[in-house]
Length: 232
Ligand SMILES: N[C@@H](CCC(=O)N[C@@H](CS)C(=O)NCC(=O)O)C(=O)O
Image (cartoon, rainbow, N blue to C red; front, side, top):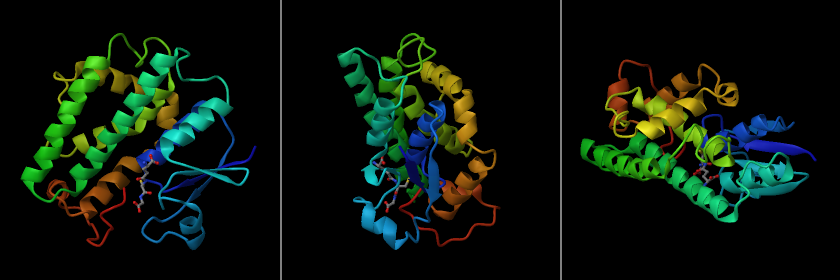
């Protein structure tokens, strides 16, 4: 089977698929596109005009979670829990994690302090809910690494990146179980493999270019003001 991942280099949703492909040591091609100027062929084949896409022998799979489910089912060892209800719960929390990723994105584009803190507080309440679902680590389901763990790596990487800028968006004491889970995941070989050392600087540069409230804390860098706001 020939796999090709269509990517934008700073997209955390693409990273969900990349991490899984890398974890399962699956051969695949990757093609990067510029979301600010998407090529015509991409606009033709991408139903939602978004990355990631996974091309499988000419079939187009879209939506990062669906792509991950496909990869998990098609290539052993399967990473979702066997138990049906547990598996469904894991899927639910993966969806929930995606909404947190969107909150992180909104944090980077909100223009006023008030709007920024409204999203930040909403995100913290979502973290309260995740905190309550975590029991014994080091992984979400306990001792084994599951699809949900790999799906949360991009969220945690982006969280750490944004949290480096003031104001703080994560409180270690309030979310101590998430902290342990996050730190464990970000130390995984596969997490390090898909995040080149210069990626964080590029993410911060993009956040600076968005000219939101958060950009004020990144002043002093040489940013171009004309970046699209809707993309990662
Ligand atoms: N729900 C989608 C979200 C993907 C998404 O929003 N990708 C962004 C880049 S990170 C994108 O392609 N944006 C282009 C646009 O909105 O025009 C998924 O999980 O795959």
